Image 1 (tube, rainbow over the protein chains, first blue to last red):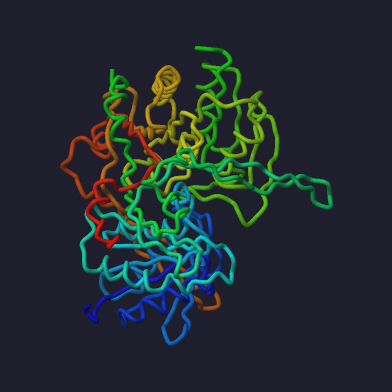
Image 2: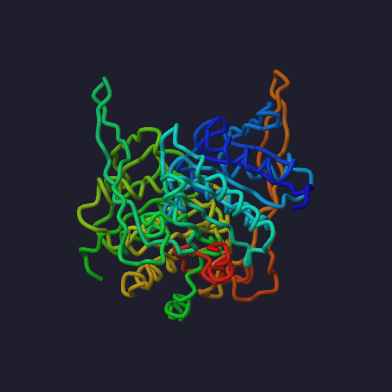
Length: 256
Length: 256
């Protein structure tokens, strides 16, 4: 490992979240050149949002001996700030997380954590999003550490083809129960939503989004959902080319 | 065309934008069963963001004879509201736009317009996002109308394989100059950003995101960027499975 390795760290739960502290701890074992830029408040579910109609504030402060930056924007904004304003030179790696809550299957699309990683890959920088299947603030990130380090070192040592990034999800179980790492595809799943209706003191309705997760392919054994359910750490390579290639020929008729 | 056809209309520029009015005009020629739910304010660049840590307000009002709903959430929230709370039965189609500004190539990832369409496809509903390569409020949507109708009718008549949605972009040119429709893939491109630094009256710095578009494959003739530049209407089928399949085998080593 080259001690010149430059690693950017971000997340979507906000710069004070325990998950990002765990990530910083691990990255410190790999390099001294660390840039931390993370949202100044929770930004879960922000997807690939960017701030184009408002200004951004950036604040510098000390975080366990590292100069860190909080940013008023989205997770994707944080990556843009880190690579454009803060990092000296092109980063060797961008890591995002560790998210409080899993980002397997369709959640990769809604996730700020994974959108930050995807933004890295769009900029041609190897990137990894880490998430733990436990949304609690006091989730136990301890068992993830050795695997986070292993996956970071692997990614630094191997060129990831096709400008992809990695979507890594940990089951929330003790270290003895973890069955290892499973490379898999994104499960075809969705959220079946309802809107919970309430009324404010003036009698006006307002709504909370709430939903039930539905996996359309419970039986498939090559998906990230299966891996997590069976105590594996799931790793899905993720790309930003969303063209549905098999459909190109089917809709050629539109040209006539 | 079945007069029972149920079509949901949304956008990301907000419910008062001229683009969505054009879309409503066209859809009215196809069916009477229309559900309009759109953001109560501009939501450009919101990507696939959803509102999970705040409540949502929905307001009903008359819009050129149609009952429309403005929603305080994101474009993706609007689709969820439309399909869950408003529509009676499963919609036959979701259309989003017409966006003021193109959403070709990498912009599909940042775009609220396209994320709304993608959300439709996640819910198993054929969906189309329409965008015009002109960000001005007084952009001329007139030349798009006949093609919008053609593409909507095609999508209603043909089953789109693989739960994909369509990303349709119009060049901002007169009707005589349009060369027709081109089915293409997403160009590999990115925004090379800078942050424009300003200072508030108290002397504190703030930043505006600003950027330059970079197409990594100017020469390729099968991309949406090429099509738009050459006066074609680009149509890219878009999928929500972002697994980088060619990379699955390459990273198998991680399992060891």
